[in-house]
Length: 419
Length: 169
Figure 1 (cartoon, each protein chain N blue to C red):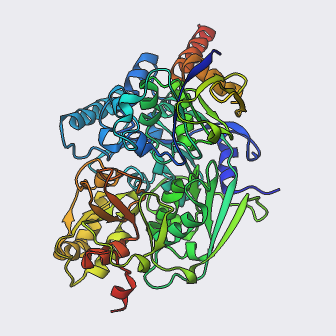
Figure 2: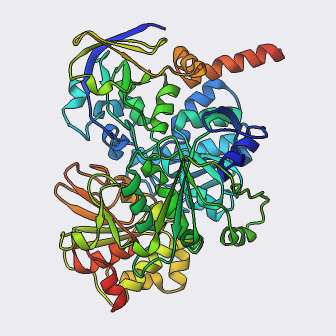
Figure 3: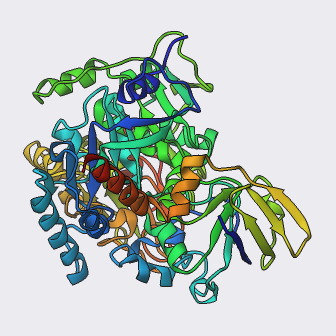
């Protein structure tokens, strides 16, 4: 019987011919990523206590994005600890002030098709769009990987999500994944892998595919993955790294197959306080907004900024609504600066934030007070996620966020794209 | 492994890591995060949870972020075990790595606020002393039980490294 792409990666990483769902394997890790919040500051003392080196400093990357730039002395100390740690342990793949930990490693070519990667952040699944298996682990689990280069993993079942047909105007990958969240719920893929496929997916640019894998964790998944096609292989061409892409066999076994028709899709919004509380943007028309945010690992990529700019060109955001934009990386910012996308956003009245996590996790800048309401291109809207427990976050595509910023209320972006 | 006995704090389904360990406190060490545990659900909860208490949740306990601060805050608040219908996978691993006992029990929804429980980790049995009921919990694989028994991944690694060096020495 055939294997899925995930099972092939796990078999190779654990030195086996084959693996089956349910088996526990010890797997060798090809790449390990940590950020500044859950990274060196949390494990430095224990690593020192154990008195051993990092198993392979060249297979480790540290990306500081949570407390960047630091807003107070506590956060500044976290950065100092992080810098000292990478120096002490010889980790040269260290990036601060470069962008978010799920985007920078892709830009740098660390996330390669076919590898097993672990990441100390729940949205590490983002890298699955490169055809890699990227599994999120907590800090102490990451410490175990740093010491041994290995971790134990249960071989997961895979749910295949097929998208067929052409996306209607005004709909995007965000709407696709919100539709899947509505189907599966926040625990619908717990302990399982989501493999996205179908012509709608292969027609998406890489930036958009990253949204599908990024939000796999919102369905409880162990990770999300997409087979690496020409789009990914072309992206890797300029990276000068070696890799061995693998693909699911035609007779691979899936625990469930969901088939979706893209033609049926309309702009969607996840309402407070759960990413699976999904309704059409049209049905929510008129809900007033204090803040709109375009940013984060999910919704701050170049494609998101350009999509927002297409709607905001020649328009102004509503009086009484603020629009915050945080490019997901410095590379994204540079590209948006070079081709005029940034100028359009700023002319519309957007406030530019640093390339970091910022308001997405309620860490800094753009924090919501009691009773405030925000629409955001990010991935999570749990109660209190962006600040006060009495604030509300709605999740939508960058297009829906931009359209809503113009009107000051939740709005269907199709009205803006047609005109 | 010893028997864990304690009073229940009962929660519903989908208790996520953002309400267990709010993002605004992530910059703090885990010992200080513990003073804010479950604050996203009720700001008074951190003051009410006492050492030895047992947390009982519904389905999908610990969903969302990979922040180890969530199980760490529960552990440092003195909670002796967490029982849930099932856990989100990262929370589950994090709890085990920290040596915080976690049990999956399909019947967890029968447990009520302030019930007195007795947990036999080794055999995966939960006795509800208040309601005079006995529940079967899923038994953890042996290597995971061993991790919890020694106090988490760090003491486990310490043991393994010591074995290695004595083998090489």
